[in-house]
Length: 247
Image 1 (cartoon, rainbow, N blue to C red):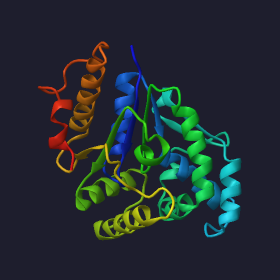
Image 2 (image 1 turned 30 degrees about the vertical axis):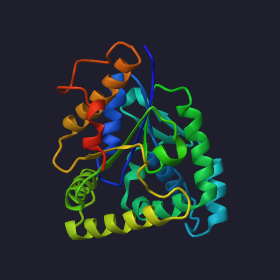
Image 3 (image 1 turned 180 degrees about the vertical axis):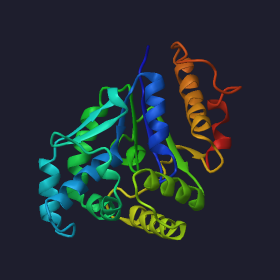
Image 4 (image 1 turned 90 degrees about the vertical axis):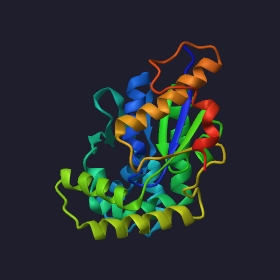
């Protein structure tokens, strides 16, 4: 069966990482969470007691970082041989990842690694610049959005699970600040690719998000005369209705 490369971009809390992980699992593909890579570098910077504003030192640490994904055990992330899956989701990492990921040198190192992993296809990649910079020729591109209050509720729940309690007002403020930084940075800003399919997840469950994207995958594989990846998740040919989904 033909394997394709799927790019999923969007702001924090839009549901892209969880959706990408489940899609990869259903398709038997590799899931590459690029945000986890930048978070891993940020964690390395913080644990090395390097000032995140010291661009030269941050880039050096990014070059040294050994980041490994284990897709066989629920997408675990290892940094320099240590499982950091939970540690990279800390509030301290979240506060500094925008700055660390804004450095051109850091992005070059990470993009090179991302392209190496995704070059074999059969991969679902999520991030903020996947469809525009990392894999501009991806077979399918999606850009996921959601109302900021819904994104804040999701982020708040995620933090609560890791033992951090923050008021919703603080979470909304942090998300808006992150959006501004990500969308205005000079190198690889958060931006929807012209040929990306936009999906508003505000009122969608994770299952509905996954089903929607898998229908596009089904239709694409049918167009190239490949076996369907699974059952028809929704009625009708979604690719023929792309104009209604794009904004």
